[in-house]
Length: 251
Length: 330
Ligand SMILES: Nc1ncnc2c1ncn2[C@@H]1O[C@H](COP(=O)(O)OP(=O)(O)OP(=O)(O)O)[C@@H](O)[C@H]1O
Ligand SMILES: [Mg+2]
Image (cartoon, rainbow over all chains, first blue to last red; front, side, top):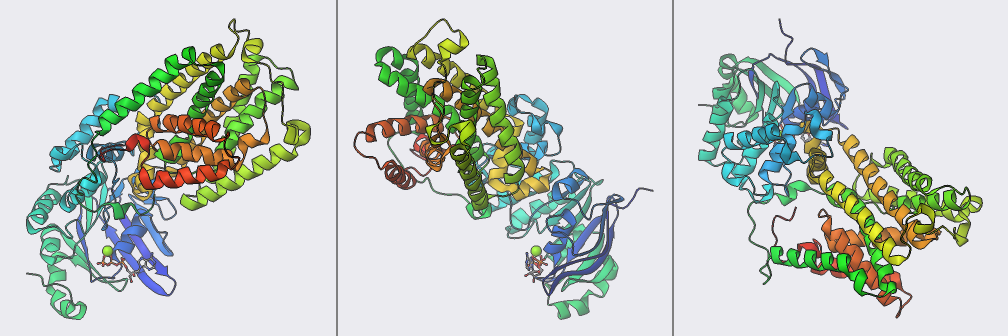
């Protein structure tokens, strides 16, 4: 059998006395659709930072596809199949949409170190970048600099960049946050169309979306895992928790 | 690389409406520069040919800093060190060891580039103001060395009597005009290679690091390596300029690698337009011109530099090349 996409064993991240992530153990199988929910400040983004390597864990062990990556830098984890989006959009603001995409496409390609040949001369890279731009409905904005995009377009580009490296594990940090109802629906549709072979871990505040998208759900509260299980089990005992956690209503 | 997120503020209105489009403005700049640098020396006196030679050499140097400062976003205040060290290497090899022309050229390039390859190991770990400070400190150390290591560098006196290009290389054409056109060829070659580098997949990564290094890392780039290579490339082209300068000037002294020299360079890039390559050429031209005009009136060159810097920031924050309605300048 294939190794799990991600295994967290007793992972912690403390900021001084604050236990932002506290003893979290979690397994994500390949092809999984998994949601991570919890109130503001629960530690969801911090957990993503620890998984992707932006922040070192202060305790515990992290494995990607059977390999211990606890001490690896973000770019080394990316090379092992992990990709992520950011809650606060992180683009290349003064570069055009297609340049943003080209960068993402060459990130895991050895040609990123080629110096004496124009990037425009690589037909395959350019075609792949253009296809992703098209797939996310940004073809009309190909040569616009990223900072001139609307917020909704920036969020689309944010997700598109994360897919360029053909990841096997995708971490999405509130991709729908701040979008209008229409934009949110179309983003949701895009997420549903993701390659089923990619394991996806989604942070989402909207319970309807989280439970519609995911098979399994993890609830995080004050850095600790409250529940983890199939979405039916979790939603069954979520009523009590909602009052306790003060989260938005499901259904 | 300061807070890229803050720049993502949705659509912006066009910032200003000047009469001249950036395209017309840029065409004018390129035409004037092209005309002056190709035909100018044939029309001007030999004093001006000398100035044009300085401009061309310093343009190579300023472009090399632009790779680092403009494209990668790494502000170096010690870049003149590579230029100076390469010039010293030529001076020592030619005068003390009596080395031949190609040995001197290769030696200058090698010493300057190797130095950047060693210092790059240190500086590539830090960013922003820390990068500024550490490059400043290393630049000062090298300046101090050129000043104090008297047996090799001649200290304050420097090294004089470096043979002329014609005498040393056996080139059949002597005189300032020949030197100028050889230098111009070197400039064209360097500019062509640098223009290719910034358009390459690697060049794209440098701009990515400037724009958002955190995102670069999470996409899978080892940004340390890219910053290091950028630093070494900049050092290598600065060495080319240093070798050319040694032959142009026939003399090397510690002032070539002092803080004033590095600050002038920084200003050339900022004034002309960072991350454009043409901008630094424009900046080098303007600063050399200004320095020679002003030297007739005042000895306070640093003060003049400071004023020019302030005016640039206020009037043309993106450089003279980017004056006019803000467009897709990069
Ligand atoms: N770099 C940091 N230094 C100190 N404290 C931090 C840091 N990053 C996060 N925290 C703290 O850790 C806790 C968890 O924050 P985190 O951003 O992970 O929450 P979250 O679940 O993503 O919340 P939200 O739903 O608002 O995005 C918060 O109390 C936060 O203030
Ligand atoms: Mg968060």
